Image 1: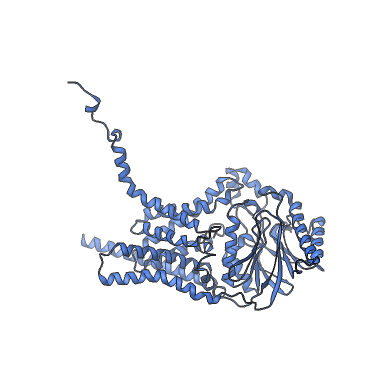
Image 2: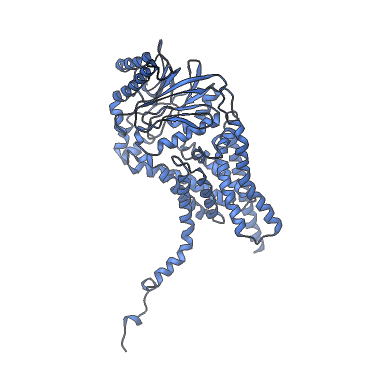
Length: 538
């Protein structure tokens, strides 16, 4: 008998047809994973600088679809993939100057919160009117992420992608939680509408009840946004002021710019002198006050007479108060400070940044970080200290609230300037470290949300761009380019009335957290009863 290769039994893995067959068997299981990651990317694409806010709706519709009917392990994995698809591209700017290590570590940690939300959404997805419960679970996840670890990282809140969207007026109703809830609810509602169209094997009564819940999940957020437009107004309530915003630019982008601190200061002085010359020439009216960005003077003007002298020169030339962003040291404490510099009195009031940036302005776990990479500890040689009081400067009779850079992402840090009397808000920032990334546009969108949330003009003076003037309706009326010296000047309204969002503060967010906890409790109770019933039947 002749033995040939064809007559020998071969293991399945060696058979030519087995690999495609195995792949075909695995493909259905891979589809949800791929869809979840792509939906995360879709959510990222809804964020600035792209005005594609509406992409958040199909992103959450797809996310809801992949999570329905999943066990907690599958939901955890799908949620994590959604988080990676969303946060990896959104936060890529965090690695511009320090490399991919910190960026990937940040995303890996933050995506865990999204994964846990995925478990929660899957748990409540079988409840009646599940889009409501699921949207509340998402907002609860954002609430936790905004507080832990290291005092939280709220970057990437769904609300921050809606500056150009129809839902924006809802920021005035209940701040970023209500705005974000409406967007997520509408997305999950779309998922339920599509699911109903695809499954018609239910009783007429059940179909009607489910259809009503699905349609309301879409219609109510849109109707609420339309109704909330009455809360948005640009009307001046305490007169107007002409404000000037200075963008001095930096010698070059990157972390090294701080080594050229005097050059950065001189750039802002030079642009202010240019503004003063244009005022004298009658090209522009004299502003009532001038706003410089964060870190416009990294040289401590209290300890360095030469820095104080050139700031005095700029203030004397323009003849009005300037808010100067400086790095100062007081009693051994390093502070990121805004200084109100008066033409007659010099430096008067100050505001010390309260929400300082972990791994940027202070280094948690310094020993552990140093053991991984000593260069990272060298970038933050001395930790900044936190301020303790809200910043509201009286500038020519106008109450100007201050939320420095990173603080714009935190609801409380902006709100308490308004509750302490701010008639307009300024967000002095320094984005030079992040080069030409999307970071500056993401932060600008936050300021637009804050303008509507509290019905206040918001100015954004930035060292290297994009600086802007934002009206209380969230519209940008002027802005600069990136990495160019420029000044903006505009008459802006001062407002004293407060929105429901300002008055309610944290209450809408806490109410949504209670709804989320209630939904999770109901889902857990249903599963427990089903398990007991199954045990009794067995």
